[in-house]
Length: 199
Image (cartoon, rainbow, N blue to C red):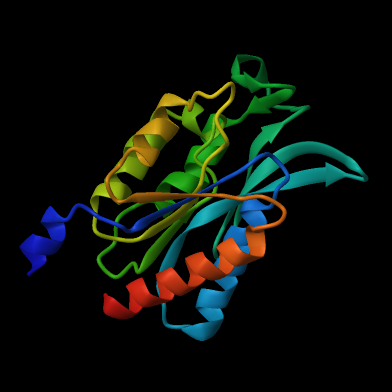
């Protein structure tokens, strides 16, 4: 039985949420996470989500937040680090790969008792870490369900790492819009509840 589950390679267990910036991908993921925890506090969930860092009304960066609320910077418009001139940039943000990896990578370690991984997001900033995609793919090839967000393709083409996730036989992609996001949240939640009940 375990061999059959391993051979399935995570079939049908990877839920990818995409959509334009600001449509509510992270909000959906947090709401699903909170609903799952409320309905079954014993569930073992691991992973992270990304939130904005604001000064007043101005967005000045992004941070990674683990599911138990530990935080680390991901990207910033201004850094006091002497190494920041070497950091890669996405738009006006400098990506702090070391900070991201220190918090995100341990959250992607496979553990036997994990019920669900949450990864928000598998995007351009995160993929500057050479260790990140291999860790995500390892999770994908385990038999543990994943709820992750990915950016919408720019000019019709996905980032190669994102394409690998979307093309995985076990992946289902949900494209969010302002009009369907509540229905998609309910759909993902009910599918995950069914999946986790069968585990």
